Length: 292
Image (cartoon, rainbow, N blue to C red; front, side):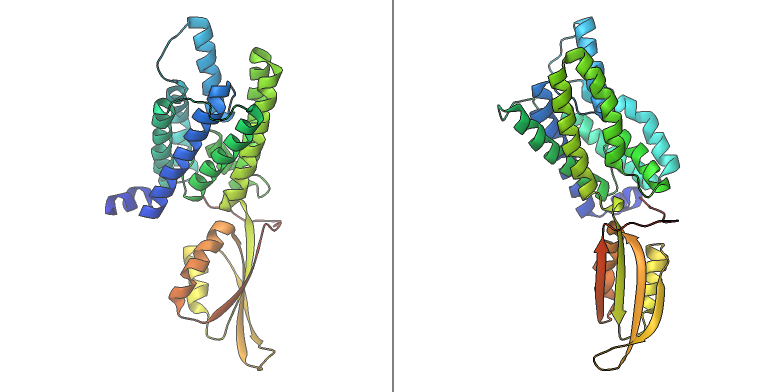
């Protein structure tokens, strides 16, 4: 457990979340997407196109879907980018997650669970999006466009991982539509839209939040936590409580939803009676760095 903490900066809960997220993502691909000859988009969608083209051209016959292997190979240079541009912990987490995903994509059977194709793309998109959202919120990813999307999201507050995925997917789906038919392209786009929506809803680091914290005692512990642990600035001032005219301290700060959750989890440790008002999904202009 200590080794896991040193390499991945994870606790056991985060490790389990990444395993669950990876399984949900791969389950959605192999049970709702691949059996219907649809394409996921992103690096995995590109890998599926390469797999389909290789089978058509070279008449390759295998007992498993080798798009997972292609997916892993393409991700290798992106692993290096994540190490240099995001963090070493994110690199190790994503390397671990993508390795698990490549194995699951290869060993999980491809079976049709539901006959209706529209049901498949909607349910598959929801399950895959939930899986990716869980992984991103635990500091890992599915690699590929997730890595590029995180880097761009750090530089642009209005950008998100889901938006980049949707843009890249459109190009892949145009190729898939040209090669395999318009219906394949349309249903794949529907899947991608549902998937991207779920990713952005669950990826807490894409969501900007603010918090007002009211307390009767000196808030130095809270201020130090915001400054040293969350690496955020804050504004605080002295006020008076309207009910009993008592002295009150007010702290105001802007955070990502992920950071706000960390703050809430640690409030009990401060042994200070507090009252918090929070808002999610707000618009923030100017310099607001997103740390992943």
